[in-house]
Length: 322
Image (cartoon, one colour):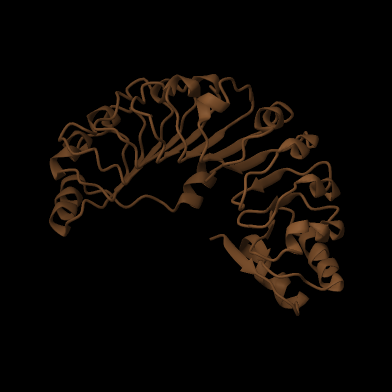
Protein backbone atom coordinates (compact mmCIF):
# COMPACT_ATOMS: atom_id res chain seq x y z
CA UNK A 1 0.00 0.00 0.00
CA UNK A 2 1.31 3.47 -0.86
CA UNK A 3 2.61 5.63 1.96
CA UNK A 4 3.62 9.20 2.72
CA UNK A 5 7.12 9.63 4.10
CA UNK A 6 7.99 12.72 6.15
CA UNK A 7 11.57 13.91 6.18
CA UNK A 8 13.29 16.47 8.37
CA UNK A 9 16.83 17.50 9.21
CA UNK A 10 19.06 15.58 9.75
CA UNK A 11 18.27 13.12 6.95
CA UNK A 12 19.43 9.51 7.23
CA UNK A 13 19.91 8.69 3.54
CA UNK A 14 20.11 4.92 4.04
CA UNK A 15 16.94 4.84 6.09
CA UNK A 16 15.22 7.13 3.57
CA UNK A 17 16.01 4.74 0.71
CA UNK A 18 14.43 1.90 2.67
CA UNK A 19 11.33 3.91 3.57
CA UNK A 20 10.77 4.98 -0.02
CA UNK A 21 10.36 1.39 -1.15
CA UNK A 22 6.54 1.56 -1.27
CA UNK A 23 5.99 5.30 -0.85
CA UNK A 24 3.98 7.54 -3.12
CA UNK A 25 4.93 10.89 -1.54
CA UNK A 26 7.95 12.22 0.33
CA UNK A 27 7.33 15.55 2.05
CA UNK A 28 8.84 18.18 4.31
CA UNK A 29 7.52 21.28 6.07
CA UNK A 30 10.79 22.89 7.19
CA UNK A 31 13.86 23.86 5.14
CA UNK A 32 16.71 21.37 4.85
CA UNK A 33 20.42 21.99 4.57
CA UNK A 34 21.81 22.29 1.04
CA UNK A 35 23.64 18.97 1.35
CA UNK A 36 20.38 17.34 2.45
CA UNK A 37 18.51 18.73 -0.55
CA UNK A 38 21.22 17.22 -2.78
CA UNK A 39 20.91 13.88 -1.03
CA UNK A 40 17.12 13.90 -1.27
CA UNK A 41 17.31 14.75 -4.96
CA UNK A 42 19.72 11.87 -5.56
CA UNK A 43 17.40 9.44 -3.77
CA UNK A 44 14.37 10.64 -5.71
CA UNK A 45 16.24 10.18 -8.97
CA UNK A 46 16.04 6.44 -8.23
CA UNK A 47 12.31 6.70 -7.41
CA UNK A 48 10.78 8.64 -10.33
CA UNK A 49 7.19 7.68 -9.37
CA UNK A 50 7.45 9.33 -5.93
CA UNK A 51 6.03 12.84 -5.59
CA UNK A 52 7.99 15.49 -3.67
CA UNK A 53 5.74 17.73 -1.57
CA UNK A 54 6.57 20.94 0.29
CA UNK A 55 3.90 22.12 2.72
CA UNK A 56 3.32 24.15 5.85
CA UNK A 57 3.76 27.79 6.83
CA UNK A 58 7.50 28.33 6.44
CA UNK A 59 8.12 31.48 4.39
CA UNK A 60 11.48 30.32 3.05
CA UNK A 61 9.94 27.15 1.63
CA UNK A 62 7.24 29.29 0.03
CA UNK A 63 9.88 30.98 -2.16
CA UNK A 64 10.54 27.57 -3.82
CA UNK A 65 14.24 28.43 -3.93
CA UNK A 66 15.02 24.86 -2.91
CA UNK A 67 13.87 23.64 -6.34
CA UNK A 68 17.28 24.50 -7.78
CA UNK A 69 18.48 21.27 -6.18
CA UNK A 70 15.84 19.18 -8.00
CA UNK A 71 16.39 19.78 -11.74
CA UNK A 72 15.40 16.18 -12.59
CA UNK A 73 12.25 16.02 -10.46
CA UNK A 74 9.22 14.75 -12.38
CA UNK A 75 6.46 14.96 -9.72
CA UNK A 76 5.91 17.93 -7.39
CA UNK A 77 3.22 19.15 -4.99
CA UNK A 78 2.69 22.42 -3.13
CA UNK A 79 -0.60 21.39 -1.51
CA UNK A 80 -0.97 23.33 1.77
CA UNK A 81 2.17 25.39 1.22
CA UNK A 82 0.14 28.22 2.64
CA UNK A 83 2.42 31.22 2.07
CA UNK A 84 3.15 30.47 -1.57
CA UNK A 85 2.32 33.51 -3.70
CA UNK A 86 4.12 32.98 -7.01
CA UNK A 87 4.51 29.92 -9.23
CA UNK A 88 7.20 31.45 -11.46
CA UNK A 89 9.98 29.60 -9.54
CA UNK A 90 8.62 26.35 -10.98
CA UNK A 91 10.76 27.13 -14.03
CA UNK A 92 13.64 25.54 -12.09
CA UNK A 93 12.01 22.15 -12.66
CA UNK A 94 12.64 19.85 -15.59
CA UNK A 95 10.58 20.87 -18.62
CA UNK A 96 9.31 17.28 -18.78
CA UNK A 97 7.57 17.33 -15.40
CA UNK A 98 4.70 14.82 -15.51
CA UNK A 99 2.75 15.62 -12.32
CA UNK A 100 1.97 18.92 -10.61
CA UNK A 101 -0.28 19.40 -7.61
CA UNK A 102 -1.07 23.10 -7.19
CA UNK A 103 -3.11 22.54 -4.08
CA UNK A 104 -4.33 24.59 -1.17
CA UNK A 105 -2.64 27.97 -0.54
CA UNK A 106 -3.65 31.01 1.48
CA UNK A 107 -4.57 33.03 -1.63
CA UNK A 108 -5.48 31.94 -5.17
CA UNK A 109 -2.50 31.82 -7.51
CA UNK A 110 -1.93 32.79 -11.12
CA UNK A 111 -1.38 29.53 -13.05
CA UNK A 112 0.12 31.22 -16.10
CA UNK A 113 3.72 30.19 -15.26
CA UNK A 114 2.64 26.54 -15.12
CA UNK A 115 1.51 26.72 -18.76
CA UNK A 116 5.22 26.68 -19.64
CA UNK A 117 5.06 22.92 -19.05
CA UNK A 118 3.68 21.00 -22.04
CA UNK A 119 4.13 17.35 -21.08
CA UNK A 120 2.04 17.08 -17.92
CA UNK A 121 0.28 13.76 -17.44
CA UNK A 122 -1.38 14.43 -14.08
CA UNK A 123 -2.60 17.75 -12.68
CA UNK A 124 -4.43 18.75 -9.50
CA UNK A 125 -5.71 22.31 -9.05
CA UNK A 126 -7.45 23.63 -5.93
CA UNK A 127 -9.41 26.89 -6.32
CA UNK A 128 -6.85 28.56 -8.62
CA UNK A 129 -8.68 29.98 -11.64
CA UNK A 130 -6.47 32.52 -13.39
CA UNK A 131 -4.64 30.89 -16.27
CA UNK A 132 -6.37 27.51 -15.90
CA UNK A 133 -7.83 27.35 -19.44
CA UNK A 134 -4.44 28.20 -20.90
CA UNK A 135 -2.74 25.59 -18.72
CA UNK A 136 -5.08 22.85 -19.93
CA UNK A 137 -4.71 23.96 -23.55
CA UNK A 138 -0.93 23.73 -23.18
CA UNK A 139 -1.14 20.12 -22.00
CA UNK A 140 -3.31 18.09 -24.38
CA UNK A 141 -1.55 14.92 -23.23
CA UNK A 142 -3.08 15.06 -19.73
CA UNK A 143 -4.28 11.66 -18.54
CA UNK A 144 -5.45 12.58 -15.03
CA UNK A 145 -7.09 15.80 -13.82
CA UNK A 146 -8.42 16.76 -10.38
CA UNK A 147 -10.22 20.09 -9.92
CA UNK A 148 -11.31 21.34 -6.49
CA UNK A 149 -13.54 24.25 -5.48
CA UNK A 150 -14.14 25.52 -9.01
CA UNK A 151 -17.34 26.38 -10.94
CA UNK A 152 -16.41 23.93 -13.65
CA UNK A 153 -18.70 24.66 -16.58
CA UNK A 154 -18.61 28.41 -15.90
CA UNK A 155 -14.84 28.71 -15.82
CA UNK A 156 -14.12 25.92 -18.31
CA UNK A 157 -17.08 25.87 -20.69
CA UNK A 158 -14.99 23.99 -23.26
CA UNK A 159 -12.39 21.36 -22.59
CA UNK A 160 -10.28 19.50 -25.16
CA UNK A 161 -8.18 16.76 -23.58
CA UNK A 162 -8.17 13.83 -26.00
CA UNK A 163 -6.13 11.52 -23.75
CA UNK A 164 -7.82 12.20 -20.40
CA UNK A 165 -8.66 8.94 -18.60
CA UNK A 166 -9.27 10.10 -15.04
CA UNK A 167 -11.31 13.08 -13.82
CA UNK A 168 -12.07 14.02 -10.21
CA UNK A 169 -14.29 17.01 -9.40
CA UNK A 170 -14.47 17.91 -5.71
CA UNK A 171 -16.63 20.65 -4.20
CA UNK A 172 -17.16 23.51 -6.64
CA UNK A 173 -20.13 23.22 -8.99
CA UNK A 174 -21.22 21.68 -12.27
CA UNK A 175 -24.62 22.83 -13.49
CA UNK A 176 -24.74 20.73 -16.64
CA UNK A 177 -23.68 17.10 -16.55
CA UNK A 178 -23.38 17.13 -20.35
CA UNK A 179 -20.10 18.98 -19.84
CA UNK A 180 -18.56 15.57 -19.10
CA UNK A 181 -19.40 14.28 -22.57
CA UNK A 182 -16.65 16.50 -23.98
CA UNK A 183 -14.24 13.84 -22.66
CA UNK A 184 -15.43 10.49 -24.05
CA UNK A 185 -12.12 8.84 -23.11
CA UNK A 186 -12.87 8.92 -19.35
CA UNK A 187 -12.42 5.58 -17.62
CA UNK A 188 -12.53 6.86 -14.01
CA UNK A 189 -14.84 9.63 -12.78
CA UNK A 190 -15.13 10.93 -9.21
CA UNK A 191 -17.85 13.49 -8.41
CA UNK A 192 -17.57 14.57 -4.78
CA UNK A 193 -19.81 17.15 -3.13
CA UNK A 194 -20.29 18.92 -6.46
CA UNK A 195 -23.05 21.50 -6.17
CA UNK A 196 -25.83 21.99 -8.76
CA UNK A 197 -25.29 18.52 -10.24
CA UNK A 198 -28.73 16.93 -10.14
CA UNK A 199 -28.73 14.81 -13.31
CA UNK A 200 -26.23 12.02 -14.00
CA UNK A 201 -27.70 10.86 -17.28
CA UNK A 202 -24.60 12.10 -19.12
CA UNK A 203 -22.39 9.85 -16.98
CA UNK A 204 -24.23 6.78 -18.25
CA UNK A 205 -23.28 7.81 -21.79
CA UNK A 206 -19.53 7.91 -21.22
CA UNK A 207 -18.44 5.08 -23.53
CA UNK A 208 -15.26 4.05 -21.67
CA UNK A 209 -16.32 4.49 -18.02
CA UNK A 210 -15.12 1.65 -15.78
CA UNK A 211 -15.08 3.16 -12.27
CA UNK A 212 -17.55 5.72 -10.91
CA UNK A 213 -17.30 7.33 -7.48
CA UNK A 214 -20.24 9.44 -6.29
CA UNK A 215 -19.95 11.28 -2.99
CA UNK A 216 -22.34 13.64 -1.19
CA UNK A 217 -24.39 14.59 -4.26
CA UNK A 218 -27.98 15.89 -4.05
CA UNK A 219 -29.53 12.98 -5.95
CA UNK A 220 -32.46 10.86 -4.77
CA UNK A 221 -32.18 8.22 -7.49
CA UNK A 222 -29.46 7.01 -9.85
CA UNK A 223 -30.11 6.89 -13.60
CA UNK A 224 -30.34 3.82 -15.80
CA UNK A 225 -26.86 2.38 -16.43
CA UNK A 226 -28.01 -0.42 -18.74
CA UNK A 227 -26.12 1.13 -21.68
CA UNK A 228 -22.91 1.61 -19.65
CA UNK A 229 -21.35 -1.72 -20.53
CA UNK A 230 -17.74 -0.97 -19.48
CA UNK A 231 -18.70 -0.04 -15.87
CA UNK A 232 -16.98 -2.43 -13.45
CA UNK A 233 -17.10 -0.60 -10.12
CA UNK A 234 -19.34 1.96 -8.40
CA UNK A 235 -18.66 3.68 -5.09
CA UNK A 236 -21.50 5.64 -3.45
CA UNK A 237 -20.36 7.41 -0.29
CA UNK A 238 -22.38 9.85 1.82
CA UNK A 239 -25.18 9.86 -0.77
CA UNK A 240 -27.74 10.65 1.90
CA UNK A 241 -30.46 11.75 -0.50
CA UNK A 242 -30.68 8.16 -1.75
CA UNK A 243 -33.39 6.78 0.55
CA UNK A 244 -36.00 5.14 -1.68
CA UNK A 245 -36.10 1.34 -2.27
CA UNK A 246 -35.72 2.04 -5.99
CA UNK A 247 -32.83 4.50 -5.67
CA UNK A 248 -30.22 2.00 -6.90
CA UNK A 249 -32.33 0.19 -9.46
CA UNK A 250 -30.76 2.04 -12.38
CA UNK A 251 -27.24 1.18 -11.16
CA UNK A 252 -28.18 -2.49 -10.87
CA UNK A 253 -28.87 -2.40 -14.62
CA UNK A 254 -25.15 -1.96 -15.35
CA UNK A 255 -24.55 -5.25 -17.19
CA UNK A 256 -20.86 -5.80 -16.26
CA UNK A 257 -20.76 -4.34 -12.72
CA UNK A 258 -18.37 -6.34 -10.53
CA UNK A 259 -17.80 -4.28 -7.40
CA UNK A 260 -20.15 -2.10 -5.35
CA UNK A 261 -19.41 0.01 -2.28
CA UNK A 262 -22.19 1.96 -0.53
CA UNK A 263 -21.30 3.66 2.77
CA UNK A 264 -22.54 6.49 5.01
CA UNK A 265 -25.94 5.70 3.56
CA UNK A 266 -29.58 5.95 4.71
CA UNK A 267 -30.84 3.42 2.17
CA UNK A 268 -33.17 0.65 3.30
CA UNK A 269 -31.93 -2.91 2.91
CA UNK A 270 -34.46 -3.69 0.20
CA UNK A 271 -32.81 -1.07 -2.06
CA UNK A 272 -30.26 -3.82 -2.78
CA UNK A 273 -32.81 -6.39 -3.94
CA UNK A 274 -32.13 -5.58 -7.64
CA UNK A 275 -28.54 -6.82 -7.16
CA UNK A 276 -29.48 -10.29 -5.89
CA UNK A 277 -29.38 -11.98 -9.28
CA UNK A 278 -26.87 -9.66 -10.92
CA UNK A 279 -24.86 -11.90 -13.27
CA UNK A 280 -21.41 -10.33 -12.80
CA UNK A 281 -21.45 -8.71 -9.34
CA UNK A 282 -18.77 -10.33 -7.17
CA UNK A 283 -17.91 -7.87 -4.39
CA UNK A 284 -20.19 -5.73 -2.20
CA UNK A 285 -19.77 -3.74 1.02
CA UNK A 286 -22.35 -1.50 2.68
CA UNK A 287 -22.60 0.90 5.58
CA UNK A 288 -26.26 1.73 6.13
CA UNK A 289 -26.17 3.24 9.59
CA UNK A 290 -27.26 0.16 11.56
CA UNK A 291 -25.83 -3.31 12.02
CA UNK A 292 -29.24 -4.80 11.34
CA UNK A 293 -29.51 -3.27 7.88
CA UNK A 294 -25.91 -4.12 7.08
CA UNK A 295 -26.49 -7.77 8.01
CA UNK A 296 -29.69 -7.90 5.97
CA UNK A 297 -27.80 -6.85 2.85
CA UNK A 298 -24.88 -9.17 3.55
CA UNK A 299 -27.24 -12.13 3.92
CA UNK A 300 -29.23 -11.08 0.86
CA UNK A 301 -26.28 -10.69 -1.51
CA UNK A 302 -23.62 -12.99 0.00
CA UNK A 303 -20.74 -11.32 -1.78
CA UNK A 304 -17.23 -10.65 -0.51
CA UNK A 305 -16.06 -7.04 0.09
CA UNK A 306 -14.54 -4.99 -2.76
CA UNK A 307 -10.81 -5.03 -3.29
CA UNK A 308 -8.62 -2.20 -2.08
CA UNK A 309 -8.74 0.84 -4.35
CA UNK A 310 -5.13 0.42 -5.39
CA UNK A 311 -5.64 -3.25 -6.24
CA UNK A 312 -8.72 -2.56 -8.34
CA UNK A 313 -6.98 0.29 -10.16
CA UNK A 314 -3.97 -1.91 -10.88
CA UNK A 315 -6.14 -4.77 -12.16
CA UNK A 316 -7.78 -2.57 -14.78
CA UNK A 317 -4.88 -0.21 -15.41
CA UNK A 318 -6.82 2.78 -14.07
CA UNK A 319 -5.41 6.10 -12.92
CA UNK A 320 -7.18 7.18 -9.71
CA UNK A 321 -7.25 10.91 -9.01
CA UNK A 322 -8.43 12.72 -5.86
